[in-house]
Image (cartoon, rainbow, N blue to C red; front, side, top):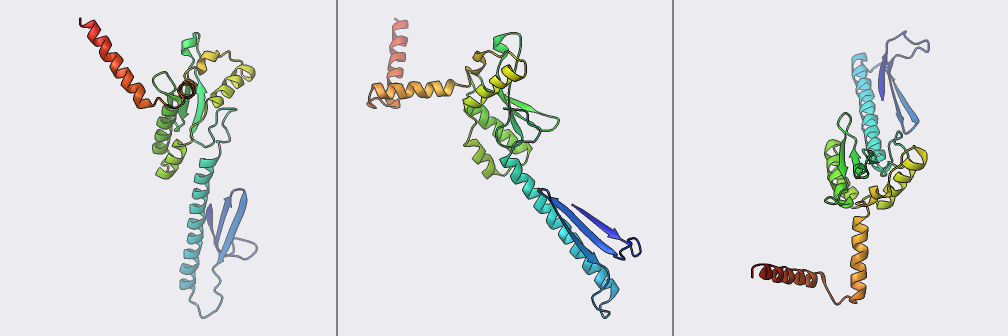
Length: 230
């Protein structure tokens, strides 16, 4: 967005007044506000203030529209500079895998890319993929001033384990890394737990509930405690 004022005689066309221009999603917009009154009865000073007000209005209007479009695009597209398989579908968060000489140094993470202060949220045995995602999205919302409803929408749609599988393949096959499959162990933990719960439910035909399991666990824990105290 830009607003320019041209003095009388500055342009060969004879135009003098304000020119307002804007480029929105690749399309150029422009408007001209001449200082030549449409009728001689209109005072020059009044017409000058009127045209200046109109020019500043359009400049502010297009600036606001540009900001809104940038916000919408940031929520729907990866940044153009995002490297292959790192994007999560919107700007501000990317995925990564740390590397090192030992296998235990390979860890998957989400990175909130605040300029000058990127923060990583690692997926570990103590922090599941879903938990790391929620932490990353919450931090992203704060540092990029995202609306609460948009933060909540992103929280509900975490990146799946297959995205990190694709990233590992990209790093190993196209970027010269040698990341072990163990790097994905914690990423798939939730999926493995879900499969186990489903198997248990099928084997008991739904007759055993989670409350039943918790009750059995409490009873077993008490029995072990009583045995140790004998």
